[in-house]
Image (cartoon, rainbow, N blue to C red; front, side, top):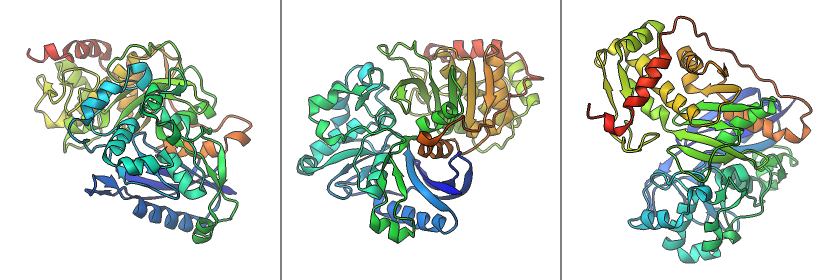
Length: 462
């Protein structure tokens, strides 16, 4: 049976999967995504990562008949490339840019419709990284051949083919207006169009492995290299491939990411957390973003789970609440950065702390859902759904939707593997989901209403 190798590049860790064409994970390898402090700035060690990738492909190739390789990645990684590799190191997106650049960038980035996301902290946007590289190393920038999002960088290193891809460009890069399915005006204004290769679909085969790489890894010389995809769009695609429509997907990890196939979102008006991604066909995918996993961790601290219905009833009955925001970012509530706190009679009770953190994360996820048009089907996945109460809370708060939980921990890899077989698929891809158990829950709608009232900055003084 032929196998797809999926290279999944996260901010903290990288993973290499062997998967079937139907998305079933057969094997997984993982390693830290190493960051080097400098010079010239904090950056990811691409050379070491490539050595690990090729060794991993060789290892998996000894046990599986690898037919295709596809990369997926977060949306804040890009590489300036010259003839055969990186022209400059890949910036760590949590690295602050030089003094003055952030203000200059904010002034030139354009309105929300052009950006498709807020202007976030650090060096999160590919356009801001390009501005930094252009100003800091003008001669290198001038002779560079391309600036590639991470999935397409790895496709380039494996195949030698330069390509851009819409889900990667639409993932808060500020290089693409997802609402209008075209490059952002900033690209033309800065003369950056020459650095963006022609668009190729995420599922398109760019070519075979470079011969030297095929020999080094012991893989067939005709092993396909697929263009690649943004990680959230890959996860969304797994549900599209299964035939779901009228759909919102809420994925939970470091970020809570909600994406919908609905139109009707006003993409001319910037609101907290709003984003506009794209699906594999280039269609706008409105969404919401908030760093819910880190907020959850801030509330939970060292307290272990699982969450319990008894603790949930006590929390709700007492009116105890975790209120935003615990991190350096305002998240969904302007003016709340670093003002997060717990209030109520059980604020100091360690026996309910994990349940309180999970409830808080569910409130943030529900806020994302309420900011998007209602969908007939809501699918929840990612790390937080491992606790059954997370899905139950959201199902209770959204009784008119069909709320489903997918407990598969490898959504991005599954979606990326399915991408590799997109053109050959003749029916819906398999999908295992379940409805949450909402029995024995307290009055969550009233709690939700009160939590919303208290989650605005002017309420924090009371």
